[in-house]
Picture 1 (cartoon, rainbow, N blue to C red):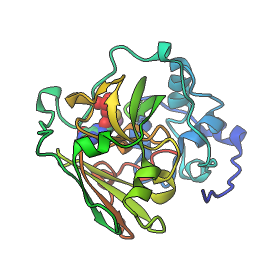
Picture 2: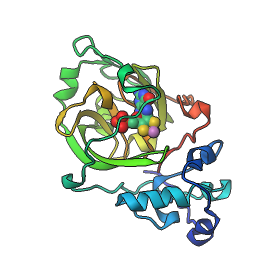
Picture 3: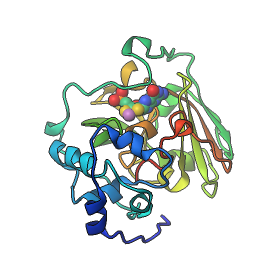
Length: 255
Ligand SMILES: Nc1nc2c(c(=O)[nH]1)N[C@H]1C(S)=C(S)[C@@H](COP(=O)(O)O)O[C@H]1N2
Ligand SMILES: [Mo]
């Protein structure tokens, strides 16, 4: 994957870091680039334990623009964990309460591919489930200041993009959700080996609260870049923005 080789000055940036955990999201507003890999390096936290994540969130809560512009190498893999470390119960989060989680009819569901794709443009759930599956135990990090380890299973997204003959020279992949949520990612992130078209949670069909029937799991991205209830995917060169991104959250939101 193409990756700019930025070399952050960790010491000076950690010195700059100050402020409170709650201000983390606010401080991201209008900022340019923030990466999880970069945060790991800059904060000196490996993000392997809950405590190190909290420490990291606290340390980076007051990063300035310069600090945020110092990127880490996005070719890095996010850490993986033993199943014994899975957080029970895994938290629910959305821009609404849990009783408003969208209800998607599995029979009627079709995943739609739009934009720069030449292959099959409509997929049933059965067809998606028939593709080769993989799983990951990784940490989900929400910008609101919590993190949790979960196990997600599904199709490696780069395999799926190849299957639908997506134009992988296009700049963006936009993900449209059943609840009017949407987000978008750059093509290197879409092709990252840990980016997953997710159909299961902890070995079972993805429950409604965690994104039934399908979500995109990206352990290299913050929580809000991991869209649930995906109904359509667009491959495009036009910047698609996102639900939170258009309200000021950092578009990059990860490594
Ligand atoms: N469709 C949709 N996807 C979404 C959201 C949402 O409101 N709607 N919230 C995002 C945020 S901010 C987080 S932290 C995670 C929460 O996922 P979880 O419920 O599996 O923990 O979903 C992300 N994806
Ligand atoms: Mo989040």
